[in-house]
Length: 247
Image 1 (cartoon, rainbow, N blue to C red):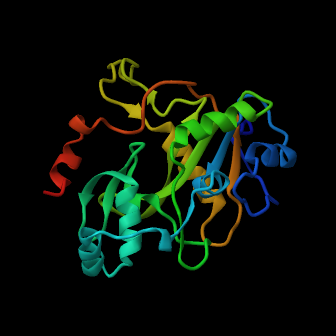
Image 2 (image 1 turned 180 degrees about the vertical axis):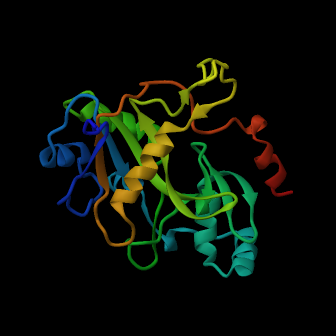
């Protein structure tokens, strides 16, 4: 029997410093890894957000009466609730947790605001426009690579969180299989594969959580479409969102 051939390799980029506002992430990763054309660089949203100055002090927020009321029911800091509202274009649920749509289209709990590894009374917002961030990072790389910015997110109907793509450049969010034939010769009518999310989830598996401090992963050997599709479903076509929407 012939030896199986590996089609995908993954590399953790180790030794990156603690990222601060203004740090050049593209330069840092390129000094630690030899990229090749076609590589996919996955970066945790936290380091991108830190480099872009998205750290905030809770003391900067003045909660309104609605934020105070929601915070009381949720047992949260009213300033944090106000920060979530400020980062949201739409609120789907206020109880038993805050499920919101960010201004760039991602739906998640607490607008993806992070309170881990940032210090007391501080919060870290998601990048303001993660796809634009991914494009800037991609353009700064010396090789023709794709960039995916990842975050962890809960999933309806399942416990636990998984890595998802919140920003991407140089790679399609979706691989469209519609029109392709199955093994019986029937054409596929529906299937659109969320490849950016699948890669982000694999990256998160390698990055780890908590204090692992390995926020960059490179994938090599994957054949992927370079453009096409959006990860965020159009509001008017999202039947779940319309039924969750707060009155």
